[in-house]
Image (cartoon, helix red, strand yellow):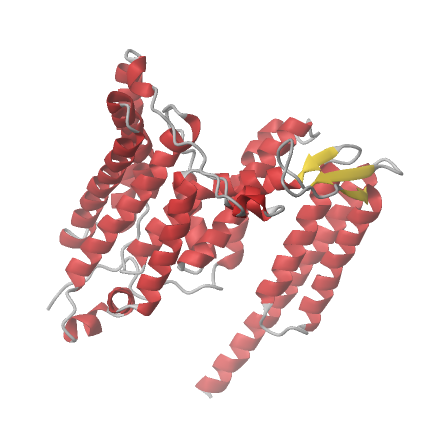
Length: 422
């Protein structure tokens, strides 16, 4: 009877979830028709640029679409996906439908935003990747920590500290590589503090991470005001120049996006591959995952649980420190108070959205990066959407994604649980 009741309860949960998702798709379709479609002048067109730069090696013609018809077509796609979800034609493959729906909605939204004008799609994609870089670094840091069973809420503080140290060290030495090394060390030091508090003294990991975040914000803000403002020469770090890969950078659309970034972009790609391979195809990864899932069983077979957690938390801090350096020596070229703007927390959301995997975290980071890039593009286009709302877009997307995925992804079983050796 218990087994039957469980099956019935699970079935009700699935039906409720399908109905909820279908309703969400229908709402998006209604928004496209009633809000965006009705706001476009009849006969207007939207021009999407498919080239970047004045003289690309291979020039593509612009994509010109009728604005009203395109918005209505995208609304139809969203409604069709809602119908499929309601009838559960694709079964449990909800990710396919939600991906198609979101792409359709975003394209319809961009068509409305640029109606009667033009927008560079390649520019949007490039900005999306740039904005996703620090978010994905934060997500990778979370993956390394939480796969071993330690929740790392302190990613925001590690990013901020890495940005500050990179700016100061690179400015003082005139060497951006030394700035990166300093940022990595700063992230490792904060991670070591988190590890000691969480593993050795078994402090609540959420509280420990929050304390580190507050400490990082307070210390960097104080030093920025009292030191950097009085000594501007310590806040003018050299930045990394773009590295254009010959031939590959000439590929239409993809080339300018993926093969013309700076050191941090290529370092991110390398880390995604290395961490994914290490976690899922090596003995190292097997031990890490066993510690994060069932530490007592791992201890029984001779795996040093505490050492594994210490090591992974510090590695995660180093990755976060590297991501922090991007803000100064990889992007703006100067440090500003609280310049990370919550990207560490968004990185945690990307980690959850990506199912605690490096590749999934990267694609989730692109989603949040697109939301971040969208608000800047719309402000340039002079959108009718209030600027305050545009600034909220990345954080609204974070809340929606995390709230919508709770219960859909499974975290490591021992995540956040201190291990007490008997």
